[in-house]
Length: 134
Image (tube, rainbow, N blue to C red):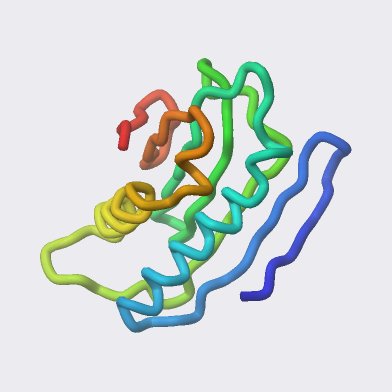
């Protein structure tokens, strides 16, 4: 996966990539890789006020963004990781957001790089005031 890193300011680094895969298992592996990429940055991303690791699904852009944020969900960590999907697979009777949430929840249960930190995992569909704990 080719990651593009942009630094709009000294305290904000954006990492982005595009998943061009269309097969379900390949897209799931890309979602797992995106999460692992974000978790590799947790040491630099966690501050004293960090409480959540949010997985934000943007249905309009078909993109997943991962951020570490505080209790109010307004002060994000230094690194923001985003993966856009150019051909998200259609899964019968399931919205893409539900599929991504399931994959991430499944991945988190056995992910030592995430479990080493005391963060709450949350899934967001749109606005941050509605976080679904995972």
